Image 1 (spheres, rainbow, N blue to C red):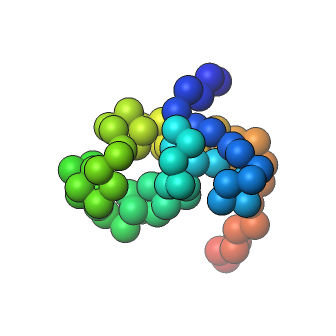
Image 2 (cartoon, rainbow, N blue to C red):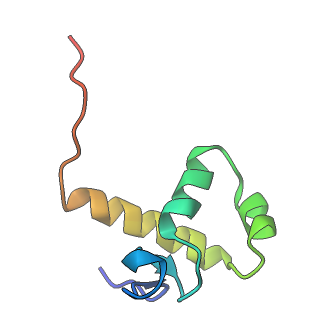
Length: 76
């Protein structure tokens, strides 16, 4: 999968994946979506973002989860 809007710079934000070299971590965008914020609300909170940044953040998060297992609590 090719990501053109996600950058990683080890001297910026401790190497966290960010949007287009900005100091806006992908995890921040995904968390805002998880909290129920709309694209319009996210774009208002971060005027430097574009709609495509939000879409690619979700694609990146989905791909990251495919690459490793996370501990889950098993229900009985």
